[in-house]
Image 1: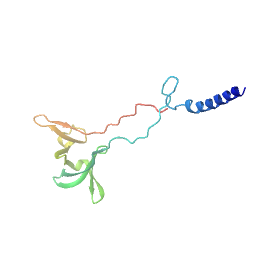
Image 2: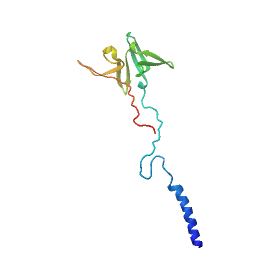
Image 3: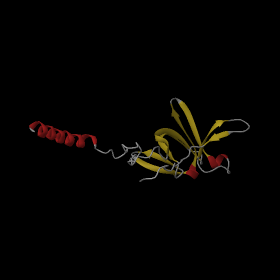
Length: 154
């Protein structure tokens, strides 16, 4: 009889330990059919920037008036079509209409970006760079593309 009660006691103890370890439910995956029951939302910052180039680059800026501003830190705001100039710790804004072109060097290569509407009035407002020159030129324009999320929050 003592063996019987000892056996029952140990079965109850093992059952209690077994319930605490094996019956924990995963909040994401169902153990019965391995289906996903919940997706946790991930808070991540947006990728990319509205600035081109993303960091401040030392450039030479040619204005529509013909004046040249040399060796100044700039970046172009693609959303608002303005050139931001960093000068003496302050940020100045050069309107798009006053900008003719700006040139910066990256990895030893020069990059020249020009006011698209000064090249051709039919072009969309923004900056372009010529990638093929000749009788017919080919230009490329950096732009912002917002990709909507392709999931629904539960």
